Length: 140
Length: 233
Image (cartoon, rainbow over the protein chains, first blue to last red):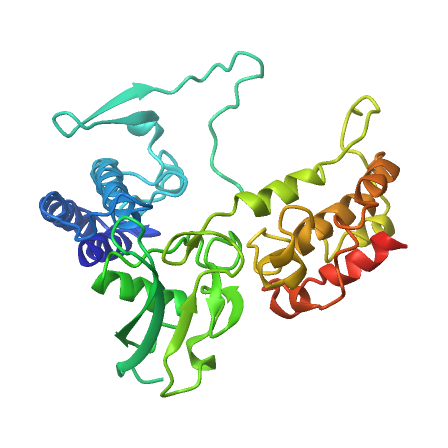
């Protein structure tokens, strides 16, 4: 359990860290898929009914691997830089400032656990109570 | 720094009411690397060996207060205890916080501790209508709250206090009294006299005999005894 969790943490750090790279992300999706198989096979020895933290951690790991998968699959699919998602292969051009491609990627990512698939939905650009903020190159 | 592994011995208080007739001390050792800097790192590795070893932990950086325990006889946070600070060749002895009922291993029932904390009304009381923006204070008035507001409620202090061991149901204890004075000293709080009346009691405030164990163990370097002294004035 401990080893599997550590492998997952290190894989995410290495493959989907602060600065992201095309090849690393693709390889990371594979790795996390493998680790997911390991997570399904983890066991705990502690069978106590009293404050069983081993069980809590095992349940947490089930959730963590799901979030890791959603994160890395979504990041791998999003071939641009946006906010904290910074890709090395997203180039700064006038059309894509700082690698941000609004034409293609101004949309929310949706992850579905069933079928492990991605979907997208449009961004609400007209807030109800405040004015629309125009898209522009980030200047801070 | 080398990355060599070394073996560290532990003696850990174990008790699982589901399995054990009575508590016992478990001897266990763990291989550590130089990157295992804090006691909590070692404990996470111990739990990897034996997943039944139970303790609370969360932020691993001295902010949440979850991993308070009795370390070689002194209360402290496992995440702030540096491994290099322990004498070599001697087992590190871990016990639950003293004076509170043990739920399992190093996990204690904190109900009594929080009951006392809640009894001092640990929130700002101000009956003026809320202003447009924040309730302001002068920098000098704000200065008064330093050393009071930083408490993380880990319970190291109250469970190191003989007066709290003796009367956990009647004596508020250092953590609660520090919090009480935090609001007494707050210029924005309007319940100062009610708060003082509430503490005016042979037990609630005056069971403190300035033993100062609380000051000795506080992982945040706070001084409940001083706050208690000021409340008494």
